[in-house]
Every structure is written in C-alpha cells, then in structure tokens.
Length: 119
Length: 119
DNA sequence: CGTATATTTCGTCCAGGTTTGAAATATGGA
DNA sequence: TCCATATTTCAAACCTGGACGAAATATACG
Image (tube, rainbow over all chains, first blue to last red; front, top):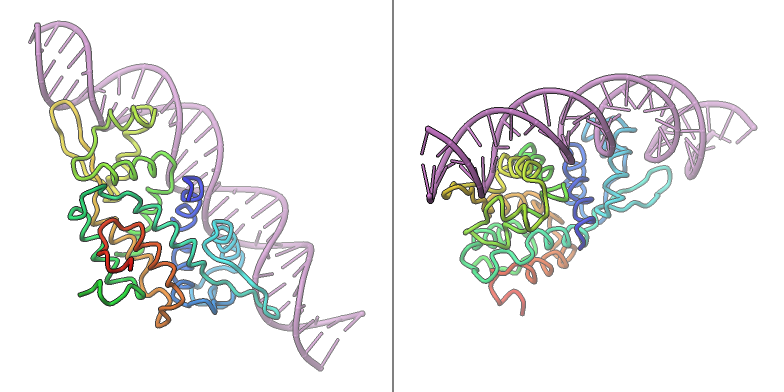
C-alpha cells in the first residue's frame, strides 16, 4: 500500500460517524447493510450518511451494490488488511520481543487466526 | 479502546507527515529518534514537526524523553495494538472464512507472530 | 402515469486543522 | 555569564472538511 492510499483510508476512518459505520459493516459481514438501515441504527441524517459512505467507498474500505430500491454497503476486508499491514510494516525490526504484546492483542481479537497462536 | 480514543489515534495518523513519522518510529524500535533527526530525515520544518509530534503524543501513539539537548521520541506499541484490535473487533462475526485473507496479511507482516501461523 | 420509498447531489455556512515566521524556553559548554 | 544548539510556543493567515436544508435521481408499485 502506498502512503497516499493509507492516508485516504485513515482519514476516512478518522471520523466518528464513519468509524462507527465501518465497524458496523465489518461486523455485519459480506451481506452488508442497506444505507437506510445504517442511518436508522446510527440515527444519522440520510444525506450526511450518504456523504460519509462515499468517503469510505472512495477510500476502498467499503463497496456497494443495488438491491431493489436499496443500496447495500459492505466492508472490503482486503483493503482493511492492507491498511493494518501497512501500519505494522517492519515493526520493531529484528526485535520480536519488543512488539510481542502487539501479536498478543491481534491473536486475541482476530477471529480467524489459527488457535495455535493463542496457545 | 473507546470510540473517541480511536478517532484521536486515526486522526493523528491521517496526515502525511505524521504517518511517515509514526512509521519511522515504529521501525526505529524502543530506542526512538531525536526530534531533530526525524526532521532531517523527513526534511520537515522543526516547528511543523514539533506540532505533529505533539498530536501523535497526545493520541498516545508515541512518547518522549529528554536526553541532553535532544528530545527522543519513540513509538507506543501498546497503543498501536489497541487501535488495530479496535478495528478488527468482532470482524466477520462467526464466519472465519470471510476474513481469512486478513489473518493471512497479518501473519505475513507481523514480525512477531509465531512461525506456525505462516505454515 | 403518478405516487411513495430510498438515496444521492447541490449550495451554503461554519469550525477546525495546517502552515509559517518570529519569539521563547531549555540544555550544554566555554 | 554568554553563546550555540535543540525544540517548542505563539499568533495570524489559509484551506479543507463537515453539517444542514432543499432539490434531484432512481426504483417499485398501483
């Protein structure tokens, strides 16, 4: 990932409404949620939410598809992965014990890391 | 981590100079770097850099200590861990196969994840 | 076709972050 | 004490991002 791309993603997430939206979509899974449903849950104005979804979308963090009258948004897990990877790149170069707690936290929160890591 | 804290961290990182600074410190390890050294490497104005270091510091992403005439900054790996954990929280709830690529990327970039994960 | 629903677009206004230059503070050494 | 180095603070100008209301677009249904 390039610096500019990372900035774009981080900027998109550095906003209360957008971060809440993104996390909601991350937790919702690939089925995603309709814009209206997100607006209801967040009690956000439709036009404000629309603008925020556009920002997240432009950053590549979410994608959309039409379904009838609704537009369904869902998280782009790949882009999220790339962003996290970018932040961790070359961390504690050559000194694993330094960022051990980092690995620890990730192991606990990553739902899909092999169980062996937690051992 | 709370929403506000995450916003604060993400906002701090959503800036070209600050992201570059943070990554430099992450890669520098716990010994850190002097403000002047960072300014030289980034070709940044001392006062601008100072303001940016303050933002990162206030977000808890870096910390500082004085050493003679210099002030040494270093990354706070714990806060970084908490931020990444917050973003991944409850991801793909109950459907590991969905965010498998996420685990994959993390396994490759995390320098301190046990080798077994890469197998 | 006309109406209701769902979402986006547009224009305006305001708040907050960023840059820059000058001045201030802190430390070390002669 | 005086000066040089290292970093921060301050104040002003600048610019971008976000909120809000109104209008426009797209789809579904009778």
